[in-house]
Length: 269
Image (cartoon, rainbow, N blue to C red; front, side, top):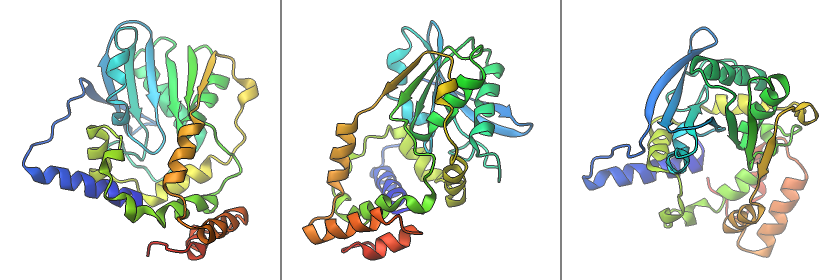
């Protein structure tokens, strides 16, 4: 389990020790939709009027949208899906390539009778968006990318920045106010952490060229690069020597994250 997940679990467990029972305050209904013969996916339904919109995430559950979804129900019927391998959705050993996961979403759309929904994808959820936008423009009303760019040549071992960030993670433990996940998502992460094998499969199965040139539906892409830069600054090495070592390690594209961690002064053990 990664240090970041351990931190989230610890924060959740600490919060539950104060004697106040937790309850999900987000006004959604929870249902399960069966796809691919026997795989059950969690779907959250906030209700609302107007065209349906469906939130799709990456490593997080549908509960990560608990705060924003109710704000949209005056104009849309809002749904979110928790993908296979995540949260309380089923965790089969296979089926994490973009095509299968896109087919999962298409089956959810059909099962719930959505008429040309707008798909909103975050992070690697973007792989599902452009797959469906290219293959099924007759079924999809539009795509919204939320910081969902991807680099198709990356491997799990290329994520050296994770090791660099983890080297400075302990100093963040004293600042829980910076955790911005909704309570429902925190609970899901604590009770249903992602299996490392599934995380690896998601990363490696996304090593394909996105079919952007074949998308035939309206697209809106939203990015906040300044915020990302600030987040990276928060976890940056605290001295010039550490910064140079981290930069060299990442540029060399090492074979595994352990090699990066070994090159990073002040790393976590």
